[in-house]
Structure formats: structure tokens, C-alpha cells
Length: 163
Image 1: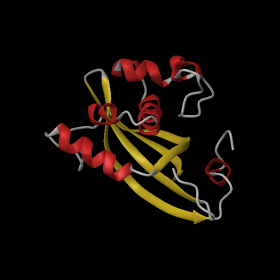
Image 2: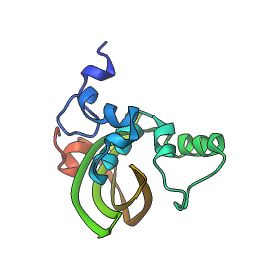
Image 3: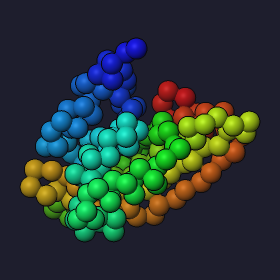
């Protein structure tokens, strides 16, 4: 079995994990742009690194909780049964001095295969605010979710690389 460090990064950058999102997972300040943080958060979700999601969520986010254990349980519960397999960063724009909007498209599919494959497509404009040397996830604007039945591959359906 290949180690996660020698595999392609789940953010679909085309790079190996060890030279892509792993750097940010080990050091939050390695994400010198909000786009890198968006990719690292997606990779953390795909790899079930839920502590990273907690560490990179701004205290003003609607889901923020002081009780990390309860929050982590909620994240695990909300993502149970899904495999996150596709990400496409489509736009990034500065809104304020330390506030950026990063538009993403993501794809997930059930971990258990059924006769009729289903794919969950997510699209959102993620807001990131710089807090010290770290970009933190503040909110989602324009969140769209669509379940598509009969899709061959989530990556193909979303038009994402690798599909």
C-alpha cells in the first residue's frame, strides 16, 4: 500500500500530497493564499482530518463551537458515508484588505456503491479572512447542492480533472 505522502493530493492540484496540502496540514501559515487554504481544507475533508477543519475555521463562523470534541463529533456525523473526490477552484477575489472570496466546486459520492450511483455536487463562494498569519474560513455564500443520480463518476460529472 502506498503511503499518503506518495499519492496525488486530494485537492486535485496534480501534485503529490507531500508537496501540496500536507505542508499546510503541518503548518497553517504555509497557506500563503486563501486558495491554498481552500484546497487544504478540501483535502482535510477528503482525508478526514477534522481537527484541521476546526483549526482553520474563524470564530465568527456559524458552526464554530468552543467545545472541540462536540464540534468534531458533529463534523464526523455530517460527513459520515461520503467520499470527497473532486475539487475545482473557479475564482478568487479580494473583498477587503484581509477578506477574500474563493469560489469552489466540489464533488462527493456515497462510500457504499449502489445500483444507481449518486453524486453530490457542491458549489459555494467561501469567504476567508486573514487572522495573523493564517487564513480562516468565515462563511459560505451562495451554497448550492445538487444530487445527481445515475452519474458515472463524480469527477466526470463535475467536469473536474481526473474524471
